[in-house]
Amino acid sequence: MANPNKPKKLPETFEGGYSALPHSVQDNLSFTGATDKAKSLLFALIRQVNGKNNGHIHLAPQWLKKHGYTSSSIYVSRAELIDRALITQTRWGGLNNGPNLYAVTWLAISNFVGLDIDEDDFQRGAWARCKLPPTPRRAKPINKKLEKPHDDRNSVTTAIVSVSISPSTITVAENVLLLASSTTTTVNNVVNTNTYSKKPKRVVGVIGKSGIKKPIAQTPIAGGVAV
Image (tube, rainbow, N blue to C red):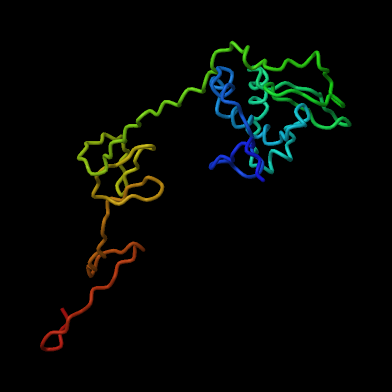
């Protein structure tokens, strides 16, 4: 026969283990004033609580990495949780002493074996006595609207440049941008004004570049007399 005094199972009860965080803690300034990163780390810590190991929970990097915590900011968040009295350190680890151990302050510690504190050192309920103001959040970065630079490539602008003129080329001073030009420019900032070249006409009887006078071709005429 069923026990009539046995409490009925609630329809929304969860089967299996879960992490419990009392509403009184969640509504207190010690928790509400903590940063989001500190709250997230607290949930990672209470994941280890099983009802008999408070004071023996840890924040070992290997365990944190397994649960998706890879940020180096856990040290800042851990210090914040201690300052706000949500957790307390129960053992100081080392090379041959294992990791640091912690306890949440809303639960009792039933086993002090292997810890660096005793029952007199542990202050259960310290979270309720926290009077710290909310932890300052990082200010949002100011997004300054950058003005789009004006594109002068299609604008008509008069450019004043200093040039040295020779019979065949115009040498442009360095760091001068020609916005509009009908000449052609070489890679050495030398502007060639001869956009095209024509071969000079050959003139018969004119002294060439070699200095030798070229003979004038004789044109035959009627009667066999050369002119």
